[in-house]
Amino acid sequence: MTDLPHVAAAGEGPVRPGLDGRIRHLVSIGALVALGDRHAMRTYMRVAMEAGIGTEAVRELLLQAVPYCGWPRALEGFESLGAVLEGMAGVRTGAHAGPEAGGGLSGEAYFRTVYGAKSDEVLSRMKGHHPALADWVLRHAYGEVLARPGLPPRVRECIAVGMLLVLGTQSTFLSHLRGAIAFGTTPDQLREVLSQVTLHIPEERARWAFALLDLLPEATPAAGGGVP
Picture 1 (tube, helix red, strand yellow):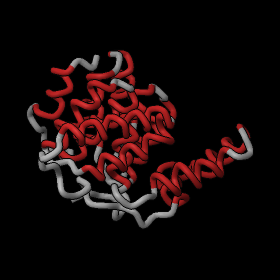
Picture 2: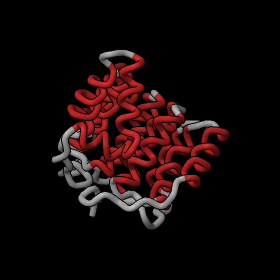
Picture 3: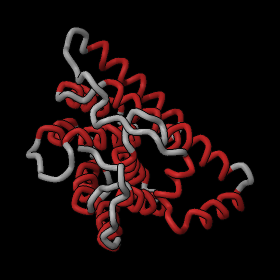
Picture 4: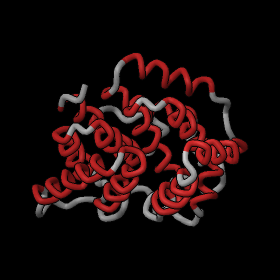
């Protein structure tokens, strides 16, 4: 599912209107980090950086991988990035972080934008699972990672959607589809996100991903979440 011709095609094929090409590159890298295919990851990192994606954008993505994919996947991603940068010595890469830097939201505000009216219910359920879980999610996953400056929420949510689809975690995938829409991504742009990832997942999972997206109503984008 991750042979190199497909990986290269994800970055080099025809660009459909809608989703920012920089986001498309980051979504693909995030999916490969979640998948754990080191060889494909390194190849695509190089493809993306030669196309102008900045090193800091990739580093932010890899930090985001910690709460989504775990430390081992994130560390493997950083090691792969280091190898790519070493091999690209003297090759000009993107000067800035890709899509314009985000930040400005608290972790709880970010969380409540993603979960909306269900926020308190989700927090209560997490506390029921373990007393420390809700605090850890708000403080670390949202406060210290997702609400960081470096990438705007809209971009982070597209990356999250791709990672969660690779992992096959249907409930959190659906939540972050809603989060992406709340931060300004359109359903058509999300279809492009899903299309970037379907190269790397089973066909059955791709079908339910598109089916879940089609069930979501059109949402009014949250102010300030977009990327020019």
